[in-house]
Image (cartoon, rainbow, N blue to C red; front, side, top):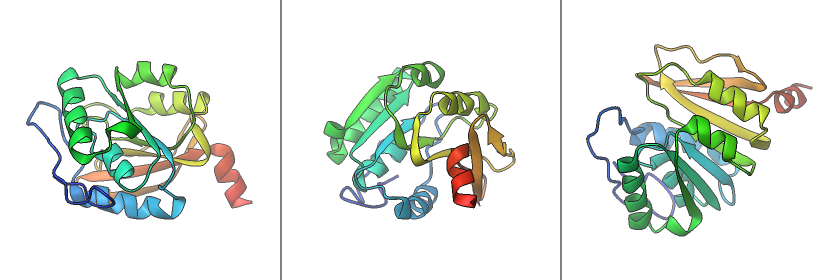
Length: 189
């Protein structure tokens, strides 16, 4: 597994074999950031929720994001993220939060241009987390939340104030893209 673009392109990422760890593949990450590029990754503020190895957030940092908050509850994975940040030279623009996502969402104190989520496929789609993100207005105006999910699982069309604007499939993995309801309504008008 490697960084697929930007300043750290080609640098390897640590990805230990641990139960429940399923890093986003290079192919899916590359496709995701091609989709996000027109929205402006450079200078953005992002969060990588259910961070695992930190691959999504590190990819954003490599492509010019100003700052990424990484949220991961497994202490071993937090150490992996820390090593990956160090090895890619992106640590100074990152904050690690060792916490379950459900608790961290209550403490996040900024608005994000991109919220990137790749929760375990063994658990149900995290609709309640998305609802809470919408209630707390953690997405900036025009911001995107991207949630990875198993292709066999249908991502909800709406989670509270977040509306699904597209769902892309890549074999067994899919990416559901959400925006705040008012942003979708403005775009449709």
